[in-house]
Each structure stands twice: as C-alpha cells, then as structure tokens.
Image 1 (cartoon, rainbow, N blue to C red):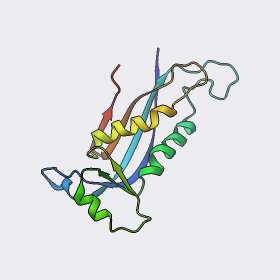
Image 2: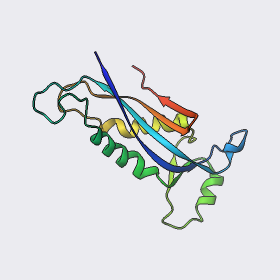
Image 3: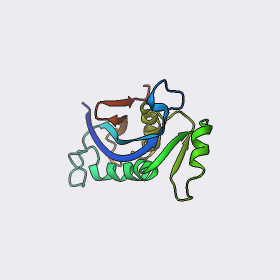
Image 4: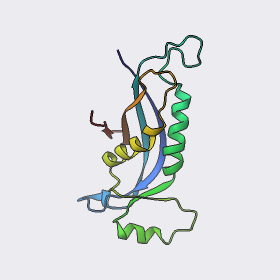
Length: 151
C-alpha cells in the first residue's frame, strides 16, 4: 500500500503568455501555489525521527523554499523567445528578478518545470520507496495544472 502527502509554498510571480488570444498576453502576475505530492511507504524504523511518516513535512518545505520559492517569488518568468518581454525587462534595475525559461510559462509548463526542480532532492534514507509523485501549480483559486511523470 502507498501513502501520499502534499506540501506547498506560495509565491507572487509575474509572467505572460506571448501568443495568447486574450488578456494573458499582457504582463501580469499571480499568487501561485506550488504543491508537491509525494508517495511511498510509511517509515517503520523504530525510534527514528521519521517513524510513521513518509518524510518530515518540514524537510519538504525546505526543498520547496530553496528550489521554487526563492527562485520565483517576486520574479518575472519569461520565455526565452519572448523578445518583447525580455526587452521590456532589460530596462529594470539590476536587482530585478527575471527568470528566463525555455518554454512559455503557462501553469502546465510550470508544473513540469517545478517537478524537475524538486525531484532530485526528494531522497529517503529509509528505503520507503519515497518519490515525487506529481506537482500541481495553482495559478488562481479556480485554475491549476498538474504534471505526472510517465511510468
């Protein structure tokens, strides 16, 4: 039997979808929720800190903070081929956070990107088959996307 847990962080992040048919082609921002879903077996090693858990929630939080939050919070994510946005952002002061990515920064693509940033850091010392099962990105209270690796 497998157990799943979720942990999330939130960021205030800007983006644009340059070829979108509607208002999303404009520069704008969201209060993103970046949610990691992990699966595995509960640790049964007696006396260890993680006994009865998949992984300590605080350990997941540290990973999400380091590899997602601290990278994109109060940043603007821009597609490397979006010359208009890159030009506009080039006049910002040097301390402006611009994150250039090789894909259009839709919620769907950001979910896959976030999975790839976090997955290498999900490690268990207890042989409990711990893995990053999926990643969910909530762009608005009513809109989110999920990415699951192919098995």
